[in-house]
Length: 405
Ligand SMILES: Cc1ncc(COP(=O)(O)O)c(C=O)c1O
Image 1 (tube, rainbow, N blue to C red):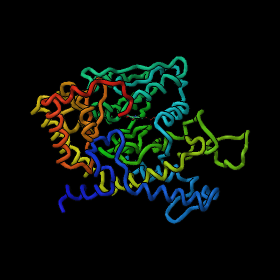
Image 2 (image 1 turned 45 degrees about the vertical axis):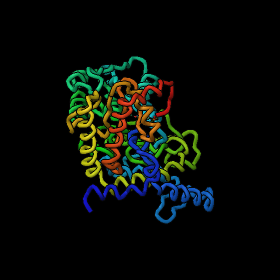
Image 3 (image 1 turned 90 degrees about the vertical axis):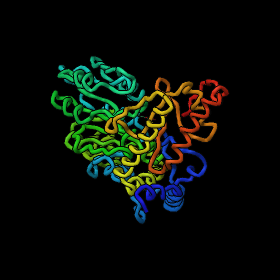
Image 4 (image 1 turned 30 degrees about the vertical axis):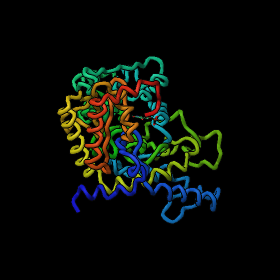
């Protein structure tokens, strides 16, 4: 079996692949069949153990109380994090809010947080809402709508910077930010760095330890095929003790069942940033996808992704479609964003043909093959774009105001 065939052998594990051309793993990774079984495990545990599930380990499964950390440990190797440094949260907005609430902002000489105009909106909304008085956002703007000029970003990071909060891979264009240089620059001036890794973990190699990044938040929703409710937050072990979360709860207490209203010194492990009762079902559902990605291996995923995304770009060039993603392999994540003429209408026509992609305003049609994508599916999608434009099919897909995909 060739290496390519070995990856395609996983296709049967993903039921949706038999029903459509699923090129949208940058938004919602395909569900592995194993989720049915793992959710049954959840239901069985609840049905048979009831409340005892919080404290009873079952064959191969941790107690419910330990699940946030146990699933974090499952994901940790995929981002180069040591065991015990990653905790699960419900979504990135909440995880980031908890982190912002835990930082020490009281540095008279530091009054700014650096973001970019290509970051995911929630990251900026939560920062704006939670920054203390006197702290300001500095937005580094893209010059081309695809990349952030590294020189612009590095120049913005100075002695007044408290935090750099940016995406590792930009969600519209899949530009990979030069994060090693950014972390080095930030640390040189005494600032910390939070990276949003939603579009990196599972599709490009990530090593938070080698990067020495302070904080890293990502999700299982997309490239890890783990569904919603599976967001993970890494905190560098030597930074953790300095965090004093103000968004918190009893899961962060070292002795939660003491129900002590007066004494609350948060735990000194990753649960320091925990809050209330987690959504346990989601923590079961995320596991099969993460396990498959770990078995397939990110190196193999990346090699295939580069080959297939390069092929998409070559086809787009032949047809003369504008490219809204970086050309160099080293700068391109798992998605290629194309802007053919009438891109929005073409995207709706593709969906009508069961070619599942999405459209992002200001960018274009995002195509995101994953390890389970065949070369034939890529050819089918590109042929379809050509045909939709040549035959005028796009005209019957007038713009509507939809909020989905
Ligand atoms: C870069 C990035 N960050 C965050 C999110 C989602 O954030 P949250 O987990 O708060 O819904 C997305 C989502 O789709 C995303 O692309």
